[in-house]
Image (cartoon, rainbow over all chains, first blue to last red; front, side, top):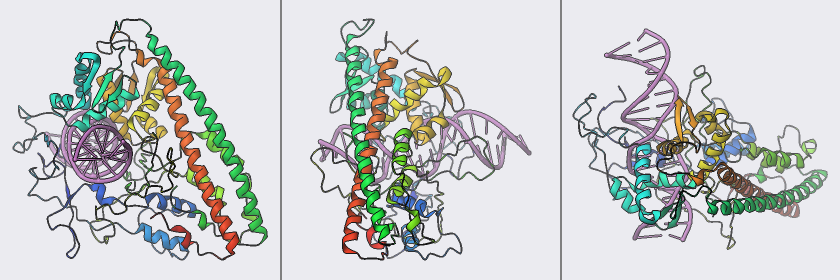
Length: 261
Length: 261
DNA sequence: GCTACTTTCGCGCTCTGT
DNA sequence: ACAGAGCGCGAAAGTAGC
């Protein structure tokens, strides 16, 4: 439990960026999600470039590395260390009160009082707010909903959780085909929905299976087609390359490194 | 629905994992890469592509030049190992450069988006990384695991996703009683057999369906990859052609690196 | 118990898409 | 404007060694 400093609440250890004077943005201590701090475009590019060059840009240039090649230069630029950030946790704010844009700031309060773990009574434990438990409740609601159709906003409200969490659940249930989106904000339970669910073998299922099989067939055909296309592309590339070679044109190869991979 | 792929601007460079050498025995390499893009299990496709380009033009290059053939570049990208990086939060230095949470680069949408499937460049689409799809794949793995026991690290590695995502799935599946924790890092599938809360016979869970769904998902991902490859092949072909025409050698290479950023 | 590390995973920022 | 969802930080819970 000795966890990081500040036991107790402190929620999101929002990183407060220490902006050097002169820099833009509002004066208030910007609270960023680290994600945005590190945000750094080009990471993909960086990776591929690095790989192509056999460099390993672990994070900064290796000492003594001489960046001479154009690639190295680029790498340098791309790899430029991201911003300076202090990341100090303002002791002040610490307890919420701030942030959380709009939305139902459902802060589950971790009482800051008890420094240790006296589990305060009304305190919600991690388990209480776990996705697993929530899933149980959610499915319970879903099953009781007439028609098996449930409104996500209602559910979120009823269960007292952020909508975001509901999505976590619906996404996997959908992946498992236990539910399906019916319309905006509405999903439907497909546990052999209405009418005598007891039916040993849901007829609707066979339909689905058939559909799926044809989907697979379709996709496979498509794949073959694409494969062929690639083959021809490759051939063309090859002949062009060879031709270029004969003419003694030294390609650095760099030109193929464009943007989006 | 796959649609759009955004360029990965943000994508924090992967992070995580420091793991000092020496530690950890089998604890997987914990590479949480995000963009590892195509390092996927589509081995067959990958291999065939690799084979297709049986040519190597290394021979005609200027000595010392590591020029990879364009195709090789692609292959490289596809095979690109996950980038493992440090993400050290240097409190010091670091000049800015990043920041401005503002929407800096507004996602440039592939302008020439065809009405339908604009199919973006080598990038994973949002759909490709969706929880729903991941769930399908995960369940697929789970079913095939002997004893129905699956190691989460293996799964995360295999599916090339952060472990965090796996937890999202296991948590809800557990809530539904489809799986149960067996031990640290191991969960077990509790097939359709028992429970499933009140649902008599969970049809949606039929093995075949889930399998089919994951097949479809796989094929779709493959298709996306192939599409992307074609796009990039085409671009390369185009640039090569133009180059040849202009005969502007040598290249600094740098000039070709622009656009997209 | 306590320190140190690993596994789980709550949580909400922020980007996507319509 | 807003529904939807990717994504990763860091805290909580669990382990191992002291």
